[in-house]
Image 1 (tube, helix red, strand yellow):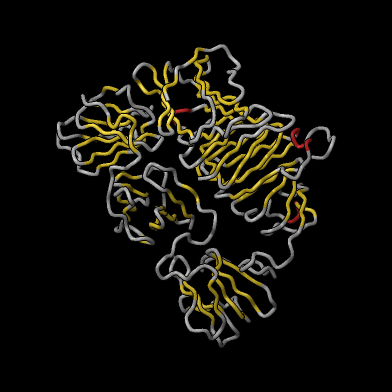
Image 2: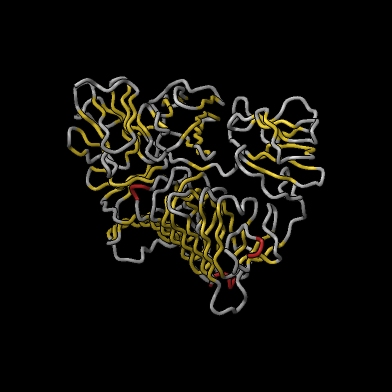
Length: 538
């Protein structure tokens, strides 16, 4: 059987890579390397296989690489290397193409194309999570794809997850497309070109009308200015009203005095959620006073349900507010849909905020871009993919049943009344960091799917009370901590690995308990359960 071509890269389970001797290698659904049908027990958390210059390379969730030439060889180097073997020449910055036929190349020499079926393909292998893709771009080390709904997504490597772009404007320069926030007035040479290549101009005669690709729009008149802001075409008339549309076939929106350049034609307003209408965040009737939110407003909600579609609350922070002594305690439900953006906190509430409960439900299949700083009795986040941005924190009992991406930090402090604890039941991307440690109470993290956890854990500077990090279901009898990677072994086999941020600042201990492996550190090393000490080699 012929060997796979040089630079072959495998990222999907059960996809075969063949070496020069005819041996067949693939990644199974448990994240281990399989050679000629035999599982290699020394591997785990494998995300990528590659064939480079006669050697088979594997990369795990900690972004470390090992290689061997023959199945009988040992993987090397012993502790892996962060240097990718996929050294190639990346496409120029801001490289861009639309439709089938072109390609972009990333820094690891992966070639990205669009298939005839509208999916992104990496080195010829279609990504099943993509669809209706019509544009690809390479910008500042990120590969970008746009679909037919004008939604943009990016990833930093072939093995990373796609991250939704929350802004309506293109995140990369598109050849021939007007820059974001461009504007023209009647009589000015040229026009505006949208992301689909349509040319929008203003006629200086005929009463100031909009023309699209040379065809006058008879529904427009008295237009004094036109602008392209965040992917939307806006026109202002002599009455000072702005109208908008995304595509030429769309109807113009209702006129508004709000200026699209600053997102607001009024001073920031304090709005309180009252609900009772259609419970849509964009519905003015569900707020008091009856005004729809604009970026920069001060928003608050007590008990109730609010539905956030897309960017309805982008540019605002929603404060969870409890009322002192209220019975029952506040219960807030936030349902999001589409590529939603949400910033939520309870930082301005007093101690009785701890008795509130918050539930955030992201629609299945959607991506929620979230920044959250909550202190509650309980917080539950569930649904599709949650893209954490910025600094986040959760005081109280928090359950996250979703796949997590992003480049933010998630702190788990403890308050005066409740402990900080997070249970994560979903995959965690490599860009996220969990900040452990508290000066006055436990700070606990439970990882329900250790094999899918690629994030970093920062234990905090000593002295702190860390509490526990539980790796659910993992069975181990030895461990090693080297170069920021904690590896757990069962015999000679690696059963789990996780990145720990240096310096550790703690006296780390590991115990095997019925639930799995428990990591403790700091001033309180009690596992809370009888268990067997796992020797740690550092």
